[in-house]
Each structure stands twice: as C-alpha cells, then as structure tokens.
Image (tube, rainbow, N blue to C red; front, side, top):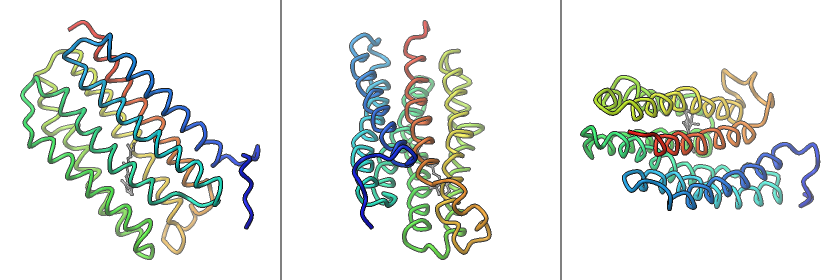
Length: 234
Ligand SMILES: *C/C=C(C)/C=C/C=C(C)/C=C/C1=C(C)CCCC1(C)C
C-alpha cells in the first residue's frame, strides 16, 4: 500500500504523532531552560522531567515518521520509549521523598515493578498476541503494585513526614498514576482485541491515539507537577 508523506486531514493517528512530537519538544525546552532559575535542591528533579520529555521527543520524532511512511503502529519503539521514561518517573518519586528518608531500595522496587509491567505488556502486544489477555493481566498486577506503593506503601508513608508541598505533589502524582496511567490498558485492549474476550473493543478507536494522548498527559503533566513543587515556598 502506498502511503503519502502528507498528513491527510482525517488522519488522526498521524496528527497526534505530530502534535505529540511538538509537545514533547516544547516541554523539554521549557524544563531545560528553567533549570537556571530553579533552586539548587530541585534541579535534579527538573532535569529528570526534561529528560523524560526529551527522550519521548526523540522517540516521537521517529514514530511519527515511521507511522506516516508505513501506516503501521511503532510498537517496538513505543516500548523502548516507555522502558526508559517510566523508570525515570520512578526516580522522580524517589527524589522528592528522599528528604523524608527514602532509601534506594524503594527506587529499585518501583523500577523493578515498572520493568515487569512493560516487558509483560510487550509480550502480549507483540510476541505472544494469542495470550494478550493473560500478559495484560500480569502487567496489570505490576501496575497495581506501583499504585499500592504510591497510595498506601512506602511513597505514601514518606510523603506523610514530608513538607506540605511535597505531600501535595505526591498526591497529584498519585492521581496521574491512578487515572493517567489507566489510559494505557485501554489502548492495549484496543490494540490486542483480536480474538480476545474484549474483541468488541477492536477498531473502536485507534490504539495509537489513546497511547499518544496518555503520553502527552502523563509525561508533560508529571513534569509540571514537579515544576510546581520546585516553585513552592517550603
Ligand atoms: C510515558 C509513558 C508512560 C507513563 C507509560 C505507562 C505505561 C503503562 C502504565 C502501561 C500499562 C500496561 C498495563 C497496565 C496492562 C497492559 C499493558 C500495558 C503495558 C499497556
């Protein structure tokens, strides 16, 4: 099939890849340039916010091109992006709770869970498609573990002995993890619906559009919560 490199006005998938690329680039420029007028204690956190959107910008630049020229979903590079950026989001949790005594073990627990979540998701989406429901379920358990840590586990406990602004930030980030990250399993179900119990979800909307919206909300939103924290008084 021949694909035009021009984005057709009804090609919403290509359009969201384009907007996603631009948004990630703009967010990266913003975070990097703001580093200079950020208090020293918050610089690493803002730098990590910028790295998250920058890594995504590079992947989006590639994925946008890949999708436009092949018409396919860039599944592999989507997961390469996530496996780099989601652990960096775990680093953000660690950095902001560090002053309240977070141990490096907490960071490794979160990173471990996120890697399990993503590798099993990739298996279901790209390797063992026939068993997508089972792999999605395993991935979902790892996801719930992260939610647990932030909502009731170590991150929550450390947050309680932190400053009011850190508490507020952890609260906002928890909402991103519970609501914002829940966008992804929806995209996964749309993309893997073929032959599964949720086959009714097939073609309802595009998996890539759902993932692209999820990435913009979560990566840029997460960074902005950290940015707001860095500008607070205490
Ligand atoms: C910037 C990228 C982010 C925040 C990506 C997050 C991805 C997830 C929370 C993915 C979760 C999945 C499940 C919970 C089950 C189905 C498979 C996944 C990998 C889509």
